[in-house]
Image (cartoon, rainbow, N blue to C red; front, side, top):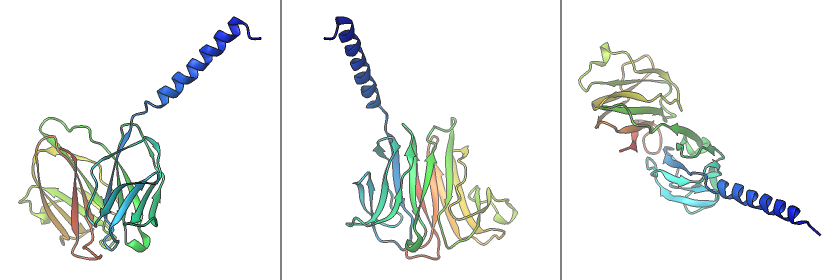
Length: 227
């Protein structure tokens, strides 16, 4: 028979195990959004650990941030209404981390591009902008972020020779109106010309993409990261 001392020891051990399990259940979730940037792919569903979290996303559409369990997750991008995965990824998501999963490339070679987002607020009066090269047609590009009336011919690129799937650092600048122009590397031939007007505190991610179906003219997806 167990002595009272043994009984108390086993009881204490059991309570410790229960407490440890309970602590594990308190893990904070991560935030994940998905972007359909594959120009010739059909509409898609996004499944997380086998459960559809977003459905019928068309090209250039995105989800908002979805709250998901932190840790390693199984993410599938499927043709809408099917269980056929065109993308399968198993990223590890940190507690309270923000992530963007972009489906890029033509459907024949579609692949995931996972970004870690930084949604910490910019300094007072500032904004943050991040740029992503998601056009398989374009080749390496130069990116210019300038005042609206800046002369491209006398302006150096903000980022040079950015390859397909290249991602810039966040650019923190004063709130206002900016012109984003993208050219083939080493040229001043504008492939994308977009204007962004942002208020203090806002954060945006801009993704260069092919035209619907693929090829040119190029377009852009602008995501609202914060505010």
